Image (cartoon, rainbow over all chains, first blue to last red; front, side):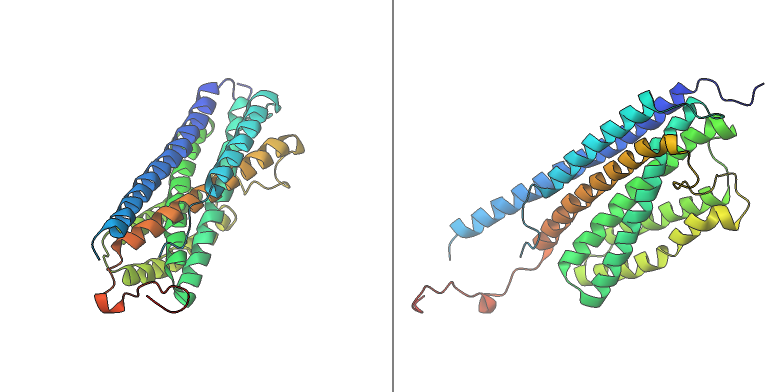
Length: 53
Length: 237
């Protein structure tokens, strides 16, 4: 027993992996939701402009 | 009225944050020296500590948005408030996950009811509860006010989380600052801290735009008497 932790790279990779998946996954989720909402707004706007007065 | 117009700004911030994170992570994993006692496991610090700093920062931004939202009102600040709460919850959840992964090889357990971890869990559930609260209130004005009040109350836990390692006997080490971390570890830590900072500001910017679009969609249509036809130059309709 030296008191020094040997190895442990699997924990390092797990921490960085969880971080990458969380940040990129959340960013993609926000981007996708934003695109859906923006397209819906554009459709509604086009519908209002082209509709009867 | 859409207040937050379409702009490349959130994507520029996200891309810049990502570049910094790749740079800081490469430095931290490949070039930074091993720590004397924790060995390579200490490299988790380069991602865990920047996440912690930025989680506190985004919740402080949410607190500021809550104050401005209550004092001045307006959908813009409510959209920023909604965005910063959600991003704050994501960062707090990520922080707990990274902490558990670091705790296992160093403390021998994934979780302990230690003051820092417990107050952090309270913070995560408090802000998670506020995200849930917003789903149950249909009136946008009431939703904005209730959210702002709840954020101001929940924010009281942020200084408690920060000082918990000094106020109580904690397994968790004291706050990581340039004074408590060896200079050999400073640069990857700083680069990743700015990486997470730019990344969350991009996320909050984009998420606020989404919130503003949703708010616009739920606004009731104007009555016919309130509609004004555009007036051409010269005064004729």
